Image (tube, helix red, strand yellow):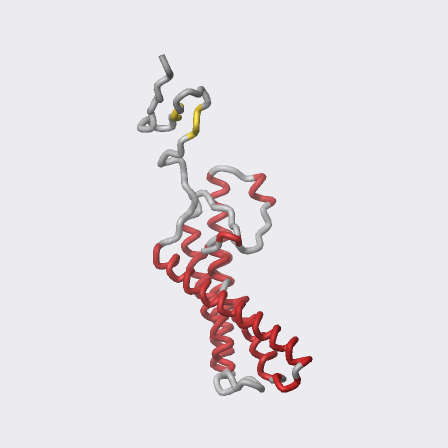
Length: 200
């Protein structure tokens, strides 16, 4: 008589044996500590950050390509294209601060992660997130001060108001501070591994 599939998926921490084989297939059950998940409003904001970052990457690519072509076609020479590429890089750098902090994509030293376990690790992650939040808050204040100080200045070629350029660090570090505070309360949850190829 052929083996019948044994379905015990309703039991906590059990496995499911497939028909015709004795190899158990692990079943992921609830309560095993899934990866950290941000609140919905922050995930929606992450989509906006990614959209702005993608637009900046496209602008940089087109601007650099324009500069290359203009070397061979002098009629296309335009001083503003270099400025556009430079400021797009600035926007890309700072707008992604919060996204990287929230998705564990920022640069970190993980030596302590191999030495500390359990509740001590939760404390380490909470303290780390708190320090990140304080640093981001200080940088938010600095960005605000620069906006106030240079509110009337404009860039040389395109005439872009300088306060707009300082607005990107302001928004990025506000996002980073909020996400760092959220990480404090989610310190007891498992962190997912950041994969830039699957950013969404």
